[in-house]
Image 1 (tube, helix red, strand yellow):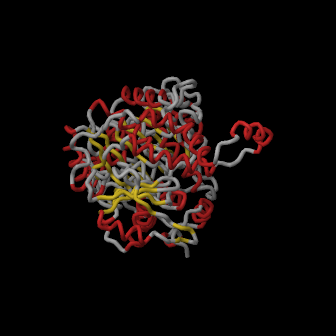
Image 2 (tube, helix red, strand yellow):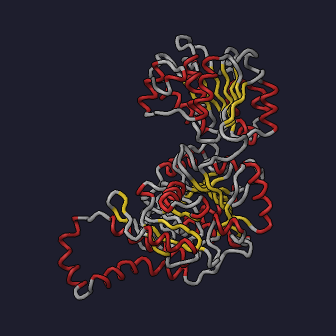
Length: 584
């Protein structure tokens, strides 16, 4: 018996699960599915974004629906068009072996008459955004008076977006005896009000701690001057070759401005906010999913429903007005069991907010320093060397090799390597050689900053380079565990672990240096030497953590980071825009 079979699911669903390659149910699925299958009860489930909530309510609803009846029996309300479509697509995959079951999506920005036709043809399950659903009810285009099941997905998000009255109006058109299943990442007062008003003695399940953030996410903060936010953002990106991130701003104006500046500086960036047309938003999101956009600058409202599992970083360019919103932001990374990093750029006056957020997410933040130009150059130099090493040889250059050899005649190997690297690296060092220290006197100077974050210059901490990284299957969590186990050290003895594609950095206290260097002097894993050496830059990278990242990052200044044509206002790459200072 499979683990999904043990939950009580029927064969058509198990066959679909097998096709999808699911092997083990997530915690929210294990807790929710048996209750929803065996009991006719209302349910409140508190679980972070990315924990498999759609399947948690989707499987039981599909199994309970009468597919031989064309009546609408299930209603799922979600906050955004993107999430509405995502849920619909997933339900269609889950129900592929259930003959006659139809799921229809209802959302704004598409033809309302076409959506009405789809419902009229027979839709046992309707997935809808509150605004469009209320509109269609008002026009008598949809009948939800006989539904048996109602799901409020991302309930806190819907209420944050101002849908409270719409939800009340929609639910007033549904039968009182229906079952209501509410799924939410947090439990603010408004969600509790909905539960009390529209639900009857609901069973409550919690995955993790109520309102807490995911344990797979490392939370970091960087203290800078107010005018240095953008410069700090660029350095955090440059210190992480292969970054694939969502950058959050508070307003639509700031979102557009930051995205445009990143594009002008040659980054693969895009904007996502409410002033964009639906077509522009679709273009940007499609490019982001394909990793053509690698820094998606978004407002909180526009980012609702982003469902991409391998986002490496969430960067809080500005903290949200509502502290609870931070939980949703950080939940965009560290999904599906992977690790991720949530970075916060703050000024000294905002440090008190960090303490407040720590209490809400029940996780400690690590104080970090913005990387210096020298630190970034070191990371980028290693990255360039590995790019050269891994580049596949283009056979089309063979006819030109005799002429190229003539040009390079007399240059020995070491000098040729230096020249090759310098082609790109000189521009990078020229840019960063005259840049200032962006850190304020408060950044990374606390005791926890020294232990958990970037090295603060304390002579008691040593920074190391190690020749393994993400392509070897390590992220910041698993590499830290590997080092601790190999060296037989305590949990806090290894810190500031920063994984890159094929190499990494970490810190330890100075008294452990001899032990570390001796252990790794002739150390092999699967026949391969694992080398550790003291980093040439003792200041540390100013970064901690890391995870699987996209390795197809475009080349920068001289490497031809090809931006591409996108929506005019949302823009995700300007043709002819300035290239970035440096390379990948």
